[in-house]
Amino acid sequence: MHSMVKEGADFLRRDVPKLLEYLKRHSDEFSYTSEYHEKMVHPILDQSFFLDNTHKMRLKEEFKIEPWTFEQHVGEAVIIPSGCPYQIRNPKCCVHVELEFVSPENVSECIQLIDEVRLLPEDHKAKVEKLEELITYLLLLMITPF
Image (cartoon, rainbow, N blue to C red; front, side):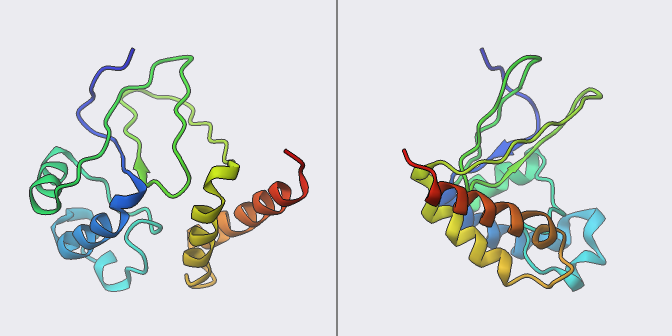
């Protein structure tokens, strides 16, 4: 059973353009991003924003989108579909284990994400971490019989 937490979020894939617009429009309001605003490449893939309750409320008011918010307990897994932005708030010290995979249903979204990552500068954190993994998963899907 899930209960609500104050922060953290998981967005629907269809809400990504609106989320990007919100982050671009309000990037100067995030106190820890004053110098980041100048060198912002991709508001989501840069992983430099955390939406608190105030920003999530404004996002809902301005763009009519609202993330799923939930609390994960010991022994529970959370599956987030490909292309869905998310943020995690750890209220206690913990180990975050992430396993990325691509299901056959999400291949087109994965290809779209690869295209976005390819446009990032060569030294961008997301490009270094994600591009090789995503391409490997896609190749495995193509050669593995269902």
